[in-house]
Amino acid sequence: MTRKELAAICVQRLKEEYPEAECSLEYKDPLQLLVSVRLAAQCTDARVNMVMPALVERFPTLDAWCEGTEEEIAELIKSCGLYKSKARDLYKMVRVLKNDLGGVIPDTVEELCKLPGVGRKTANLIVGDVFGKPAIVTDTHCIRICGLLGLTDNKEPYKVEKDLWACLDPEEGNDFCHRLVLHGRAVCVARRPKCDECCMKDVCRHATNSELEERILP
Image (cartoon, rainbow, N blue to C red):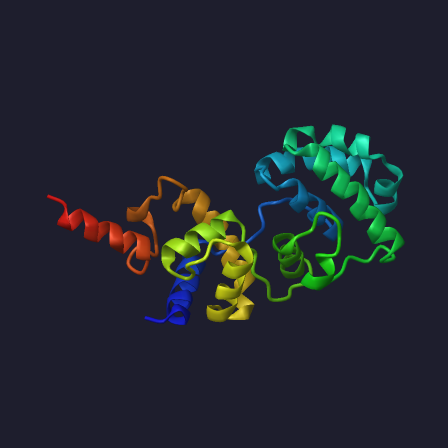
């Protein structure tokens, strides 16, 4: 079986298992999503969703963000971890958006990556969820599960992204990655995957190897 054939099977299985492929971060506009994704680094989406209402209340618009201070931002996001660096990035990012881009959030990965604190994972999420363009978000769930399945042999995010572009239908990429997050939380849990409950266990490299090892153990 080729990786393209494997990818097509996994896409279909996950569609059946998780019909709604949605980002777990809660947002009402592109700026809120951009902020949320930066806060989500080494932090749970659930925690970010708890922090965001106070941020939105204090900074309802880009202009309001630009009127705030780095210290004020840091105080509001303390519970997200790494709050000092995140506050610094957000403080710089909103000013670049306003002063250099006229308040318009870019719609390409390349331009988004020029914003302070924005990497390819964040940029792909914005491009896919906000602008509806083909995107592949290589978060920890995506990297881990695609490695177990055999869709990639890499662990570096950009290399995984390239591997997935090579085997996925571009129009499926964004939703596929969202479904991998749902699957990673519900079934393919890090360190304790529930292989017997997995909708892809018959095509997963990890699951089939595990079964083989069990058969040959004394």
